[in-house]
Image (tube, rainbow, N blue to C red; front, side):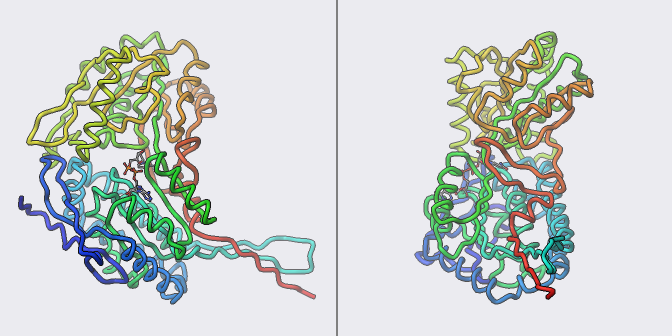
Length: 485
Ligand code: NAD
């Protein structure tokens, strides 16, 4: 099938050069809204990954980037943000084609946030500095923050552009070089960004992109001795494996893993506002959102009322062609993701769940669509409640007290995000304090900004992206103590 969107040459980007994989392997890229192949990209093997790490190593050791001042690097990162904005339409079209994201969402969220993120990290680069420390020694003691070296950035399929930027941005700000392996099924914006980074003035070899599979390219990258840090975003299962391998090699890692957040609605909440946040929380990005809110916990006093409102409102959410600007929910990003959602909804029926709305595929143009689905009456220990579904599916459970709400919210192995809907100020803070999550939203959902750190606890991982915390994760501290004798 032909497309009017320029998907580029689909080659690996190594040492500033576009090239095919050493063995010539290429893989299909599929449009999730039709199930059709739209282009192919090179599939990297271990030899290509090694070449990319060598290029990154040489660039780091050469000092062309790491030797710049933070301010000089910051200027170039500012230019990256500008170029993202100047090419917003092309990037949005590409991301929408690759992931099946609604085009309006791509522009307003993916592209806008990616530009904001680079801008934020550019500003942080300006203020990269150390500290002087007061000591009883007759000495001047100070610290310097130095880059780590070569960073392996491994990213998932759901927010390709944003999650690549949330690693490449701080890594570059701190003076590191990068080898990026995007998700197998959504490689296009990573390759486009390689071109933009170069155009902005990032020297050759500083950012390299290897497209390919996790078990081959990802594994080779992870185990390459030339890599100094692994920044991983993906599932908890793969994250466990990646952290294990990095641990054996004593490499620092950042682990941004799965989620299964609880959204707690108290009886004193503004229900009309709460419903908007609840729906956004589980349909945003077609539910393929690590920080989505797929577990709704509702005070029993308003349980029936809220279920009734959801039963009316959710079928009205516009699901359809991602190219239609009115579409809010597009297809799942791939057939395997659609199948997984279907399996979980079938399991919910077996586990005693009542399908309030949805519960089936949407047959449209051969795409991977699933109707937003609300399920009530599931026991808390059911797999559908406990596991990460990663689709537009909401389970709804009642609670009778604050203690029970907190216990239910904290009852899964995950701890990435959580939300509270209440008009009671003290209660909001009290509950936020007790929730096991890296971020807690009060009276809305998915309020994200590069200044606000995010990351997980428990099986959702460790380390923080965004905020000054992210920059710190890409530097090492050196202490210098100068004798004053
Ligand atoms: P995934 O774990 O299947 O893959 C993530 C990346 O790891 C991909 O690039 C993949 O190719 C690579 N990979 C797979 N096997 C590998 C191996 N053996 N060695 C090295 N790399 C390997 O995840 P996915 O399906 O792409 O993404 C969905 C998951 O990501 C969900 O669990 C979601 O919650 C999570 N996620 C988390 C965050 C966060 O910030 N915490 C953000 C987005 C997505």
